Length: 380
Ligand SMILES: Cc1cc2nc3c(=O)[nH]c(=O)nc-3n(C[C@H](O)[C@H](O)[C@H](O)COP(=O)(O)OP(=O)(O)OC[C@H]3O[C@@H](n4cnc5c(N)ncnc54)[C@H](O)[C@@H]3O)c2cc1C
Image (cartoon, rainbow, N blue to C red; front, side, top):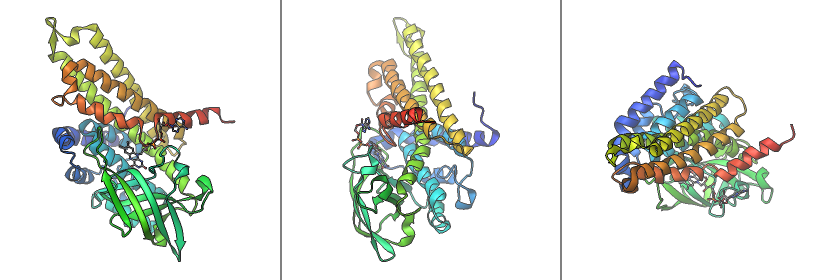
């Protein structure tokens, strides 16, 4: 049983109102036009949603990880593309707060929380592989007090919009995860080349691009954390990010279930609303039950994070269960809608496409199982 406290309820209510009154009204159009939700993200920043779990001194709402998960569940019900952009921006801001110097925090985080930066980006995956992140090939070599960056990144959410991109690069050749460092690359820096925007199945209003770095010069103060310790920063960021994606998936699934309940009451067959048929009722009951379990797993992981407890395994469990559940729920939602579930007249067609990426990004379902089983089998 989870009960939000007063402050968390306020954040949740704020997100719900914006999601239903503003985002849900434009989500289909943004999707159809593949239009980046710039205006919506600015409005979300004004509501404190671009730094829900970021200290007030950096412009955040300082509302905690649970409030962030609750907000993400609401925003994703309104527009999953906007939600993923918000999720990555919050993750980037939190990572800079956690690992950055006071100067780096002051320089970048208020830009993210205020919406002056349209978004933040997370540059880990490369064309040659995403799951095996330690095998990355992008490199940074020392040059005086700074660095010179070369390489390529793939699938970078908002990479063409971001004011700051955390980029992981190898700073010691051939030394596995130990030779990787994290850098704060600024949008528009010389040597940063934007690749084509991917033509995706879903989340079409979010922007996903490849990036190339060609002799991109980095100042010494663009190194995030210690040299050679970047991999641990990526893993820590992803632990938190996975709770965000679990929450996003719960939101998309909830929107699909709500649409299905409404449809089941309206659509008639054999002289009855289809919601009278047990086959339909049981599908909806299973979806409701599984989504509630997913929601509780996500909030449990968020609660551990908020209390400063280890939550890597629980974050992976939440992400695995919530994203797989939400995919099933969206599939059921199409089934309940019959042929109308397959056309863009009803929102479940978009939910079905949008939710598909959730078992892929921030670690595939298989990678979550690797994380969970590694923890399960380790010697204690
Ligand atoms: C819409 C979208 C947005 C994204 N945004 C970002 C972003 O902002 N930043 C970023 O850095 N990346 C981003 N990604 C990339 C995403 O994180 C990767 O796609 C993901 O990590 C998988 O990497 P891959 O695509 O290279 O697949 P691969 O790693 O090549 O995996 C292919 C298949 O093999 C499986 N597999 C791999 N290793 C194992 C193993 N050890 N055991 C079992 N199975 C395994 C995988 O689960 C998968 O099924 C995004 C991806 C998408 C689709």
